[in-house]
Length: 196
Image 1: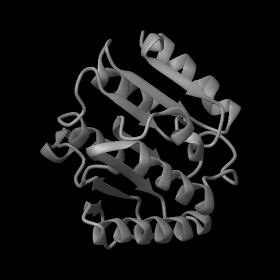
Image 2: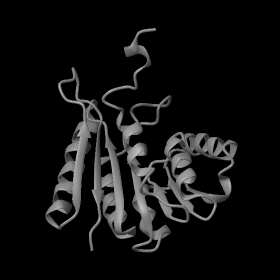
Image 3: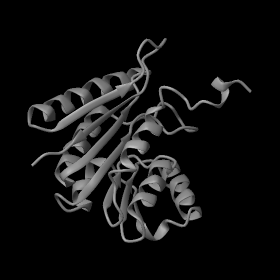
């Protein structure tokens, strides 16, 4: 084994990077929202972070995603602190009080292992981002991983980045992380800290 074989992936994947960053920011007892539950990986991460006194709300429109995520969360022992919703992430403002969430995570695109034609959609995602802005508490973090490597994802990524830029002009602190110089557009992470 060479040193390169044992070295951590660099740059880190957006999914690993967002967890590394959020692990220090989400506290026991917090409310966290997984806007795109998928296979449950982010849901479990958030459930670990909020602890037994915290709560995670997880959304997905695909039945297969909820079955997978629920099974994974239950096996990890976190079922009592996670509530799943078989509905659009745009509905999160109806499920959480305004200004109550410490973090809202989005991992856009399609469900791995399922139909790649079923993806998050630009219009719904923009509506969900507006809901996320409402439910986040001041100082709360909005994390969005975009996948511009497929046509629907490319348009969605542009729209999400424009939405984030508008929040920056309103005083939010925004950052973008991702690989450059790749053969096809690489996934990237957008992070926003709500002000006010």
